Length: 443
Ligand code: KIV
Ligand code: ZN
Image 1 (cartoon, rainbow, N blue to C red):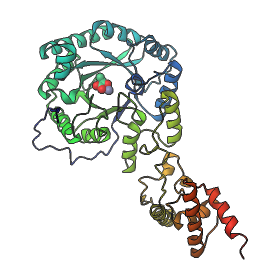
Image 2 (tube, rainbow, N blue to C red; image 1 turned 45 degrees about the vertical axis):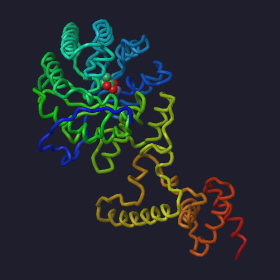
Image 3 (cartoon, rainbow, N blue to C red; image 1 turned 30 degrees about the vertical axis):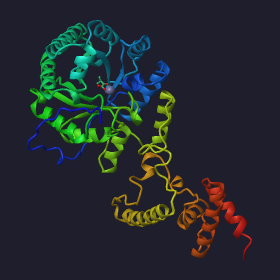
Image 4 (tube, rainbow, N blue to C red; image 1 turned 90 degrees about the horizontal axis):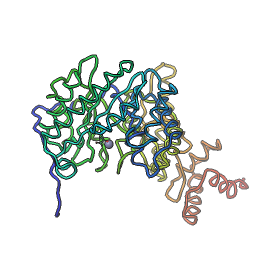
């Protein structure tokens, strides 16, 4: 290969992250309205942003990055609209994003005037490639600029005593930054903002561009977690992007390595390959019995709203949300699912008597589709690769018809032949009509 990228590695003696399992939900922050929005071909207008904001609040997000107010009038006006129309619930903190530039900071701070609570998210690039190629400045200049910006934010915040201000800092492309330098800047900002246990500062570590395997990132997180000077006064946050397709693993290992909070977007919207998908992360937790503290009990309606607002469709195979993810087309899978569903129904019947809970033990289905508002009807679909189990299941579940085994075999042959000719899947109605046509007249 002509090109390669080196990533910073750190030695983490006695690392703890493989052993730690997530037993509670992390703090979530949705960046759908900022990172997600800035990556849309058609950025959201005020109306769409509001619909998405309301959805996020209903789902249970307590921190929502609502925009990048210095980027456009629409962005600025949206923040003003939320505040002047009193649309932010008391237990929700809005966050606004700003680069470390005096005039942009000024504009950003103006946008939150009058808010009850607001988080100012300051970002400065620290990675060597950005310093050299984008900004042409050295480490010392980055450090001074960042501290200067943090001081400006604090000064302007102090001039708005009725707003409870919170502060967040992101060293951009943390994962490609020399660890010692990232630590130095984060400690300096934390000190400038006088972080305390009562008023913690959020230090957000982005994999702005994913560049390594998730274990390398987890080492970087644990290294910071152990060395931050005021760890007791810091909320350690992650902001993974998905360039290598490993954002979820990166976030999960980063949490195991000591982080407290994750920023991402629903269904992985965001720059390029997107931010980490928070729906996937939440339901991964749910699938192992941890309450994610986000309501995804009607995932289709969440998905519809996100699709309408972003105008980007969710992939058919998106974890937990895609059209096909609770569906089995092949006969062997259909048969196994059928057996599993029957078995847990038996267990559930006993558990009701014993008032116990039932483990979800169904082959090929990681969660009960009902838990996200999907239903069993869509589980079994019939095409040329389906076996007799699938055909029998469709007739039994939709038409209450229990076919004897011999008839199941005969009908499934017919169904397969028919689907082969059509080259498409058959609906339950097609299967029923075939059955009626071929077998109903027999006595
Ligand atoms: O990806 C990123 O680094 C971000 C900010 C946190 C700057 O979106
Ligand atoms: Zn980002």
